[in-house]
Image (cartoon, rainbow, N blue to C red):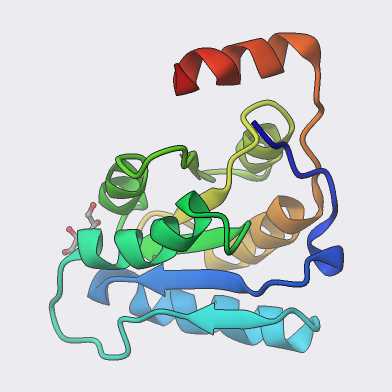
Length: 155
Ligand code: RB5
């Protein structure tokens, strides 16, 4: 099991981001924020605001993380819920709903989350941008008790 402890700035691979129509607008804001702060971003869609199915985009972000070609992903839907449930079905992927700054920090420090999920309709968008920064800058604590719990999830 690998626990990346580098900050996102040191990643050579790009950050994957995806949303359904319910997260489309917030996703554009997150992409603009990431570009403005020098991150390499790969948008897997949706590229339109027409109705679509969030599991398709969860898979496009979680798949490359599961197979090891990417390390960090961001997913957005109306609530952050459906898309996180879908992402967590992909082997060895941990997706967390970053519903607050504290929760986002814990998602990295304690849960070593690969993917953070947000709700366009349920979260303040400025808070989301602060959560994105926290998600990308916070390393896993590597604490013994947390490693043990993650191993239990994997087994
Ligand atoms: C789409 O209307 C909405 O259901 C979706 O974006 C998400 O909130 C599901 O959990």
